Length: 318
Image (cartoon, rainbow, N blue to C red):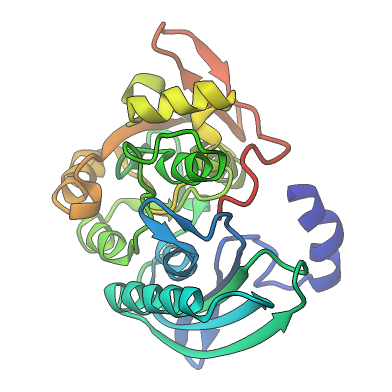
């Protein structure tokens, strides 16, 4: 996917706002700094423990804006509907979107609908775009050696919840998607932590991919502690069964934050005092070398490189 973007889309659409390849484009609109993002949701199945494609479509776009330090305001939603989808199913998904938007404090202000022949899509695809007002100047370029990396809770829940439902693995009773709108948590960190460098939601590609992107953009090394990363035993068991690495499993309610060493404990306390951050932990630190790399210190005390994942471990997770 990374090569596709750089080789096909970036040369065709190149401009100053697109060039950073951030989750949200940041620009000035008549003196107001705004963030704009878009995402397509093709999750299968469209219902899963802890959510559905409608909730996911709202939270996913809200969270990309939140990670950019922007207060989400408005969403657009487009629906690609497979012919024959029961109206009751669509109504339930739309109701879920309404509830998620209300929780996130955003309005869905525009949209589009297309119906395609049976087999041309799988039940329902949703595309959402979001606009937000930037409340903090955040960038991976502000990251420097000595900084600390935090996550607001257990990783891998979303990907395993979806895969368990899809493949009939039987983990549904123990694992639910973490799908949730993150702006209230992001805002609390912004308001209290002056040493906040940047934030990022580790969705497709998981924590490993997100931290790789930050390390590469900042020109630093990020080292994470295996024993410090919050992971449910059930999620680890499921990953072993599927033969996948939990670090690459998608999340939909997780926020990574990089803060100065001085603000690390403050940021941790802010996270843990929020309902979406009660299981937060400091999981790593920033080193000068090797530049652009992610390193994990294992429970045995050894260090190894965590390589960028070239494919997609779990397709159609979001």
